[in-house]
Amino acid sequence: MTNVADEVMRLFAEKGSDAYFGENVSNLEHSLQTAALARQAGVADTLIAAALLHDIGHLLHGFGEDIADRGIDARHEVAGEAWLRTRFQPATTEPVRMHVDAKRYLCRIDYEYAQNLSPSSLLSLKLQGGPFSDAEMREFESRPWHAEALLLRRWDDAAKIPGLNVPGLDTYRDILGRAAFVKTPDQRFSV
Ligand code: FE
Image (cartoon, rainbow, N blue to C red; front, side, top):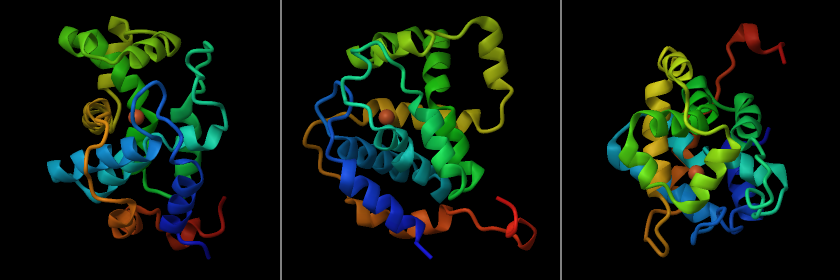
């Protein structure tokens, strides 16, 4: 059986060197910087795994890096969550699924946050529906894992520093293993 950590390593090896949309770091560099910030914060392995894997949808969808420039929202958080769902626990998959909504939420409640978004993040915000309305904001706050999604979002936004020296992908093998989904006897025969 293929090990989940091996699958992740392979995806990053194949596609991780692609540029991270409109930023001066690659997808892999961006993911490693996000994960490093999570590790520094001392959070659970499942959330560190979420930080590392939050943009895995970009590696899966096969669109070019200029996708937002072309006015397309690839819904990378949905593609990412669908791939992760069969491999990781909800404590990993849910913050990933909600990390775009977390940006829309933070733009609604935090003026300074919105001011400091990078130009490409602002462009994708528009495609993603813009800041939340009052009702959307309250609905977001009622969801499980929203606090974790907000933490992930802050690391995500800070993880765009060209040339920053951070631990490599191999550092995360054990963490990925511990965050992986463990099927209970009842779930073994379900899809
Ligand atoms: Fe990201």
